[in-house]
Length: 374
Image (cartoon, rainbow, N blue to C red; front, side, top):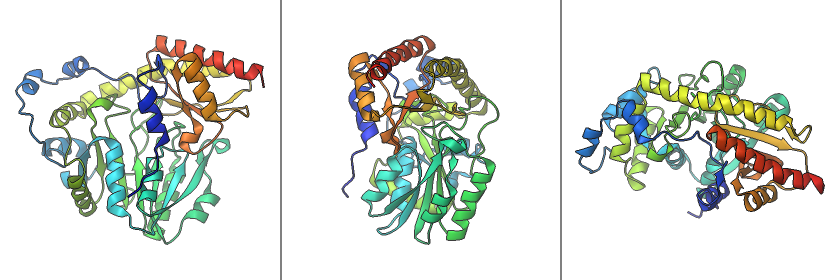
């Protein structure tokens, strides 16, 4: 199994702890252990917890708690993983065989573009169109869908655009998987991080051919515990557990305890509220910053998630622009090519407001240099 480089993750791993301002993150400023103690995490229990293996598919207590988030789900519908990225990975291993096809939404987090290709599958794409408020290009979608399509992969709310599919689009995607006996993997890790309005509807319950991937990294603000989950039909979830046995075996036992506290209804709402408070302030700052450039940026405001995806009107490649900002201003952001689309930048919205303002002004300095010599 030869896998291609995951350019965004490698860039972040190399630089995110070196630069002064890391604006490449896709989550909000993380909560602390002190914050979790205030939510009811019992430190005395952690102090005396034997540091052995946890149940490899997640403790029954945690799976019961997660099941409450998805009407009709039971513990047998759920596999707890080391982050949502592991959930994506083991689903690819479970579902795909050489010669299968995957239909991949673009722009997107590129993990499930790379993994299927390493398994001998053919990955086709369909685009979300900025000029249509980030709704799918249905002609492209229909032309790519076929009897060989094993699954469609989407993120909703979307990473990197922060957009949310309309109800009609969700229904069209489900109709397609039913028609072609395909599956849908819906990464819903940003559900709960809406900037305003109601929570994004889940694909859960729309078809028995749907898998949901989610976790604590984004809307909850707890990426460091590396807890994610996948939800689907019990038979396939059991097969995914077998894949898990060959990889990381199971999640961390302390992380499992923390997750049980985080997903409680009252705590979940408090964590979502914290995320929305951070984003509520920063979205205003960011919108004013974008508008101050005149027609240099095209931006559809994010609906959910601590990320903004902006199109810039200049010929400079996005990687070159990002490297200039990193090297000259000590700020890290993500180029559009890392999401399969050129001419865009993804900028994090989840930093503390004072750091956010300072980082934006440093980005401004470098962009103004680029514009001066266009």
